[in-house]
Each structure stands twice: as C-alpha cells, then as structure tokens.
Image (cartoon, rainbow, N blue to C red; front, side):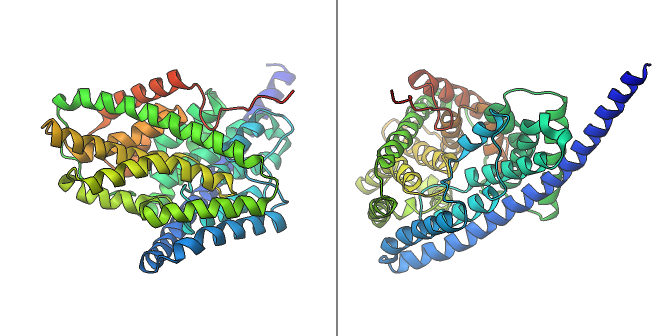
Length: 426
C-alpha cells in the first residue's frame, strides 16, 4: 500500500471515529431537549387549559399573550428573524453556505413551548425537529473534516429528537430519510444509527411512557374496505390542511404590521377556542378523552356539530397560529384531525350501516393516515403511530391505509407544507 493510500485510509478512519463520537453527543443532547420540551409543554398546557376551562375569559387572553411574548423574544433575543420550520432545514442541507445558527435551538424550544401552552393550535414536534437539526448543524460547524457531512449530522439530530419525542427509533430514522435526506450512505447509517441508539437508551432509562395508553384487541377483515375509504378521506383532508396553511400564510404575509397579525390571529383563535376548547394547544388532551369514550359515541346533533366543526376549523386555526407568529407544524394537527375523522366515520358506519367496526381502531388508523398524507411519509407515520401507542396490532392495515392516503393526497396536490415553494414574482 502506498503512503498516499495509507494516509487516506487513516484520514477516513479518524473522520469516522470523530463522527461517531459527535453522533453520540448529538443523540444525548437532542433526546434531552425533546424530553424536556415534551414534559414542560404537557405540564403547563394542562395547567393553563384547566384554568381557561374554569374561567373562559382566559381563552381571550392566552393566545394574544403567547403570540406577543413570542414576538418580543424574536425581536429582542433571536435576531429579529422568524422561524420557518422545516423549510429552514431544507435551506441548510441544500446549500453549502447556509447553516442553522445556534440561536435556533432556544428560539424553537421557547417559541414552540409558548405557542402550545397558551392555546396556539399546533404542536411541538416541528419545533423539536428544527432545534434538534440545529444541534446537528452546530456540531458540523465545529470540525473542518465534517464539512462534507452536514446533512448526515443534521439528520442524526432530527432522528434522535423524533425518537425521544415519540419513543420510536425506527420512526426517527425513517423521518430523517423520507423527509430530509432521501438517500442513505455509510455515514448516514453510522451517525443516525448511533444518535438514535443513544436517544432511545436515554428514554428507556427515564422510563418514558407512551403518549397514548390504549389497548388494541384485534381488527377484522370485514372492516378493511372501510379502512381504505378512511385512507381516501384522510388524503383529501390532508390537502385541505396543506392548502389552508399555504393560503393563510400567504394572506398574512401581506400584512405589514406584525401587531396587526397578532391581533387578528388572536381574535380568531380565541373565538374558536370559546366554541371548541378541544382545539387548545396540541389537542392531545381531547384525543385522550376520545380514546376513553370512543366505544360509547353515538350520532347526535351535538356530536355531528362538534366533529364537523372541529374537522373544518382545525386546519384554519393551525394555519392562523403559524401565520400570526406561532411556532410549530402539521404533525400534531394531522394526528388530531385523523383521530376525529376516524371516530366520526366509525360512529356513522355503526349507527346508519350497522357495520360493527371498532371506533378506536379507526381513530388510530386515521391518525397515521392523516400524518402520512400531510408529510408524504407513509413509513414514518406507520412506525410513529405504533410507537405512540406502543402496540403493533394494527401494523398491516395502517401500512396499507398510509400508502392509500399519501397516494390520494399527492394525486390531488403534489406538495406538502414543507415542499411547497411559492412562485417568484416577476
């Protein structure tokens, strides 16, 4: 072996070792960030929601307060720059010069937390993803030998964050691949694999419980055609969500005064919360109640008004939350819509067609189908939802329905909120 070949081999070996050590650190930091944000959000959202439920006047106060504090932090602490969500990651991985600066870590952490706990109708998932990606990006900037591996280290951070948030290492890896990287090489496998392993070990040590504690008994073959119909409906609803976010963001972008954005957004959010408190924050509190009571749901005027109203308003309120300065994305809203859509469909089938389907199954499958269609990532949605409930009984129907919903959504509208690029103005 020549001296040059030997040096190259040693250089690659040393680089891989450094990447491995860095990935371990990234995995720990991202897991710590994700778990901290999750527990802080759950704790304060629970407190503030209950206070607002007891004193409904607070539904008028919380949204404008939360959005105002976010604007204050952005203006005085975070370089007066708005958070763009996952598009920031695409801009970074698609450019040699653009980076995710270190301030993006606290920016997304605190803005995501404040958005949700004060009633903004979105979730912390995208805030976690971008903050975790920023950790990977900052690590990449520390070593010259990592210049070629920016995407891999960003993906390592994202995968670790998703793993810790949803207790699903496979979902973390698949999201990094399906949505961000779209390619796998040896460096991706090493960095992402190590980061995810550390993140998963971290949540095992902490004994993190599944977000939703449900018990799936079985699913029946006679329900399969209804599952496919649910996939089609989820695909259509996901397009409604995507188009709502794009349209409302574009409309709000034309408002020059940020105070006006906050006031308009807060008024609409507050009015919606007064009618449908289920729209508060991530909505996981409402979903947990639905899981418990799904078997006893019956079609009444009140039931239909609530379900249809929520399915219609959730995409609009999510879009307004984001357009008026809130931080977050479509992860939690997609799962929320999917759960309500699944329950509505199952209840109607049982009431009017004597279908004998299990509403809980439709809620779980609806969550996965909506998420798959909204982010065009069926395998991520499959393992993420199974990880959320820590049950793989519905693995096969979820897989098929996720593929159906994604195909339907992509056929109707080829973009997600992440991939859409506005046409340049001539």
